Amino acid sequence: MPPDSARPFPDERSESNAAIMIATPTFPDLSALVVDESLYIRRIVRDMLMRVGIKRVLEAPDGAEALGALAESKPDLTIIDWDLAILSGEEFIRLARTPSTSPSPTVPIILMLGQPRRNVVDRAISLGVNEVIAKPFSPKTLWSRLDEVINRPRPFSQVKSLLRPVPRVAPAGSSN
Image 1 (cartoon, rainbow, N blue to C red):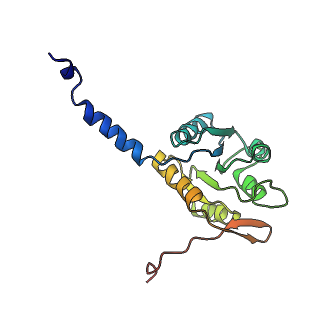
Image 2: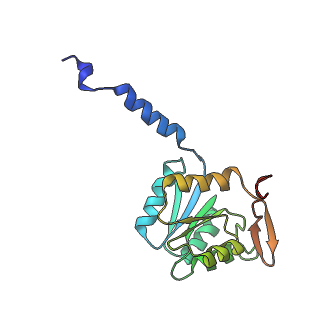
Image 3: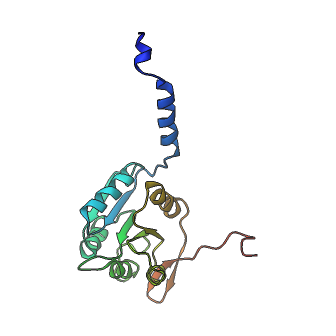
């Protein structure tokens, strides 16, 4: 047999891999803070972030440690779970969005929810999260939220003591 027959269709394999790589967005030179009680979830999210070029990933198991990491490292974005011990996701978001208590009140915050209930989503939005994501989620879902907060950031407005992203406006013609 000729040597080429040992590897059938090598070009098709490399083309499909190239297509996958082209479809994957890249966000180089960013740092992220991933906050979840589960080491397993933190590592999965870290892997998803690294696959799009985010190499500096900090991890925290609770909101108190996350607040310290936010103050010390000032990451470019935060991905946090709502249900945390010591300092909950809700409390972290409130402190992170209050200019008098936060070193980085406009850091993009992507909230992960294990059980996305409407009242929790509404509460999180009122506190100032940029995006909400339901667990379990695919890399593509996370990457689309990253794309929103990095490539299409919304301005912030102060509502009482909190800084919140301005709500998105519906595209023209979609409300008719």
